Length: 104
Image 1: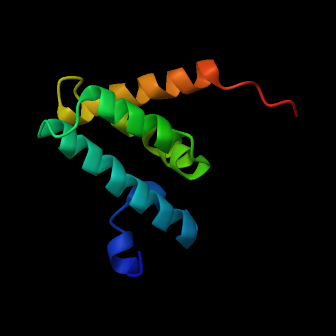
Image 2: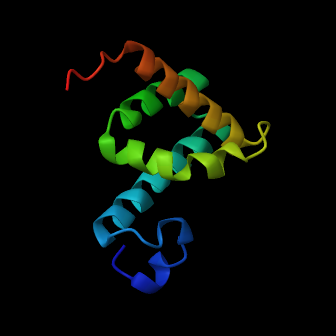
């Protein structure tokens, strides 16, 4: 985000470098789009789960996810955010089950 005054609204990322802050804000924008699309019945659970797998395969998005995960976990499980969180967690579990271990 080019405007530091607006970026300061996101206190979760207060200590992050500018590049990381911008990546996290964009990641949040994409995540919020999926939450809304699902709540409007534009995307099914399967659509969101598939998008989540793609997004979570990115190191940048995974860093955003790990940074905001506990905050999202506290959402009501019946809320659109809580339901999307669960779909992303299922996608992450699928990725972890199918990703071969790093040989290093």
